[in-house]
Image (cartoon, rainbow, N blue to C red; front, side, top):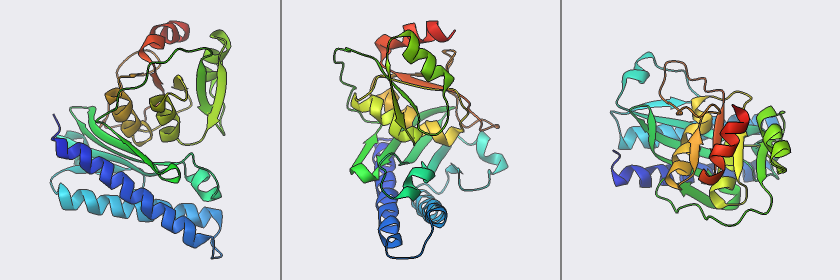
Length: 247
């Protein structure tokens, strides 16, 4: 089990990286940096900051980052930090969108035990200490869908449950919409990697939400193959009807 300090570290690290990304974005407005260059710069600098913070605080822990090569011994380590220094690079590069995030999670025994998702443009960081998701009445189910890629699972759920599709960029932003209670179901079937969902799953699980693969099986992290193609995050009272529909 993680030390309480792990939860706080994840939150602070994600927040610091988010603040750095906002500074980079602000400085880019007065430069000739292209959107592509802005995204690359943000990815690189956020990665370097997070690696430095983790290494300084937890020198014996392994790190898996979207922005670095995968080290062969990583998957046999007891503690592995899985990070996405900038989730939603496309949205971040546009400069006027808020649906991008920073992901920081600790994995032990293939499960995320501490994590945080920062939404810097909104000034919010969610972490794995709660609060519990608000259970309000659902008048119409709201299903989160990718802003740029078709998601057959989300489209099917919305159609069959008479729901409304909401479009967002970052996986972290999508998941936190469920945590906040702004939406009810996030189903992804278009392919992801461990860093895309690990921190969002840590936060969502702590908030009392259902998290699984689309077939209902557990989400396992720190695997040799980091490809994790599908994901379901939703209210627990909606998990059974959604899984029945998909399977």
